Length: 338
Ligand SMILES: NC(=O)c1ccc[n+]([C@@H]2O[C@H](COP(=O)([O-])OP(=O)(O)OC[C@H]3O[C@@H](n4cnc5c(N)ncnc54)[C@H](O)[C@@H]3O)[C@@H](O)[C@H]2O)c1
Image (cartoon, rainbow, N blue to C red; front, side, top):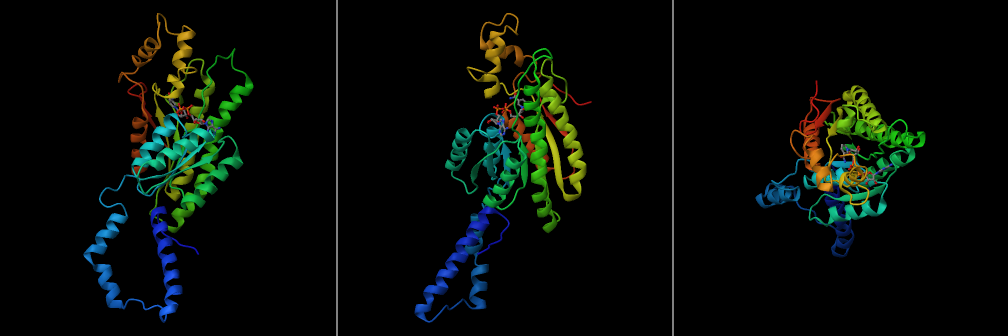
C-alpha cells in the first residue's frame, strides 16, 4: 500500500483511514458487503461544522508553529548549538532528524524531544559528516522516515586551536574534513531531494543552512584551521546559492558569536574557559568567572550568543523568499558587515 500526503502527520492519518477501509470492506462481507454513504450523506459530513472543526484541530488548529510539518536535519545535534537549535525548531512544529556521530547522546536527545507532547517527531540517525556514504545514507534514511527533506542544517563542527608551530597536518585535515567538506556533503546529498520536491510543486522553497561562525568573517589568531574552513564555507554558500536558486533552494550561512554557555566553552573539564585559565591566557584571571567576564566584555551586547539567537536567524532565512547566498552575523555587535 502506498499513501501520499503532504506532511508526515497527514500521511499517518491517511494510512489509518486506508487500513480502516480495508477492514470494513473485509468484515462487512459477513453482512452483505459494504454500504457506502450516498453522495448527499457524504456532502453533509464534509460540510458539517463539527467535521470542519475536527479537521482544523487535527492539523494543529490555530496554534500552528512557524515550521509546522517541515522536515529538518540538524547535524551535530546531540549537544551544544545543534541540540538547542533542534529543540527550538521542534517547538515550532518541525520534524527533526538528530544527526550525530555520538550515538548515546544523540539517541538520548531524540528521546527527550519525543517525550514532549506534540504531533511532530524526532528521530536519531548516526552520521559522520566527513564521509560521503554516511551523509548519503543520512538523507536516504530521512526520506524513508519522514517522506522528504525541507531544511538541511549543517551544524556539526570541531575546533582545535593552534599556532603554525603547533598545528600538524592530520589535525588540520581532520578539521577541514568536518567543518568544510562536511558542509559540501550535506549540500550535495540534500539538494536532489529538494529539487524533486520543487519539480512537483513549483512554488515550493527549501533551505540549506550552514552554521558558520564569526571566525568565518574575520581571521582568528592561532585558530587558522578553524577560521580557514569557515571562510571557505562562505565561498561554498555563495556558489551553492547561485547554482540552486533556479530550484527555489536557498543557501545561507549563519555566523554566531561565542556560545559561552555551551560545552565547547563551559565544559568543566575540557572547556575553553578551563583551558584558558590554566594556560594563563587572560592576565590576572583567577577563576573561570574571571575568564568568562573577560570574553563577555569583548561583545558589545555584553553576553555570549545563545541557541535562541541563532534560531531567530534560521527562522529569518527560512521565512525569506528573496534572499540567498548570505552570511548572517549573530554576534551581539562583535562583527559588523562592510
Ligand atoms: N560554540 C561556539 O562558541 C560556536 C561559535 C560559533 C560557531 N559555532 C559553530 O557551531 C557549530 C556547533 O558547535 P558547538 O559549539 O555546539 O559544538 P559541540 O562540540 O558542542 O557539538 C558538536 C556536535 O557535533 C558532533 N560531531 C562532531 N564531529 C562530527 C562528525 N564528523 N559527524 C557528525 N557529528 C559530529 C559532536 O558529536 C557534537 O555532538 C559548529 O559548526 C561550530 O563551528 C560554535
